[in-house]
Length: 418
View (cartoon, rainbow, N blue to C red):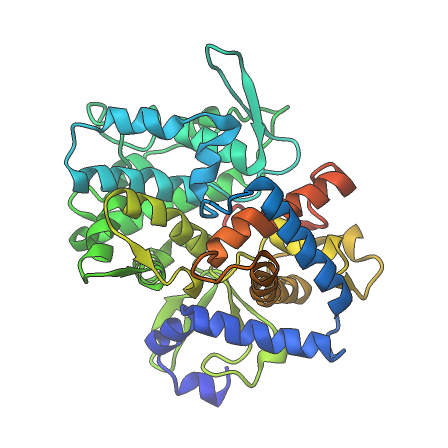
């Protein structure tokens, strides 16, 4: 720990590392460094960048000719297969007041997002319907599986009120129950099942410990009252509420300790030596990918409840397999090590931290280039829509073409980051 670290309180460090301004600033440092040839891991090809941005714009135009693009959100996965599952849930909660409907939608969104980490290449979920079974994999499969688990009352402790998530229900959840809901077997393995269960247990503990926010029953939907209490709702306010009240769910070994001995959980925030001049907390590169994914995904429940959300571009792009994979697959980023894709990496490896940071910074640039090609403003096409239109879809297309949909390289995951 440096002198600069010691002089800064844990609360101040956490506050700084939880802002998207800090994420962008530090990601930008690493991008400038990589462009100047100082990276130990990647080169940046700006000619390839122009081609990649054009491909994203073309794909966006082909998928959404009228440019009426929905947000990049967990709600897209709830629509997998073109099925309007949301209409069924809406009908089931129609008798509730508007606030309780919003809390219910937040409940299902939050627990589904926390279950949305890399599923691995060998897992799938089979959904039965009168029209025949449908099989989903990866994010869509996880979304559909968690949707059905919520509808069946898996996360509720009250059999008479199945359509909710509460602390007791989460804390009582077993590995066998979660595996059953996700159809996990020896022939259908889900990566990070234990990590997902641990996150849900942690969530249950956090909800139970903060009744002022989450109520006596400890429901994630309590965030609705926090987010809407201060008047107009901004995307960064949603993220702030998520990080302020839910950060303890992340693994506790990734922490910051100040001079007084106060410890704060940092979550999705990792070390990179090239950020040693940044303050506070030199060397720390925050991402908060799942927290931002949750924030993107909470926009629709709030808007459905009559609350407009502004400042969507305050959030960053999401540094994960599809967005970051697009940059590798199109040659925007090229690993300096020819054997880069041959090994399994850890989440905190410097190369992975840098790849994710470069992804964040380059997604902002791609968004500007896409808007320019499509002739629209950021107000008309916020980053949330560029991702959906967009970079995430293009990453999937390139991965399908090059590797049958597999990620560009392997990161060992416990289900709490990817």
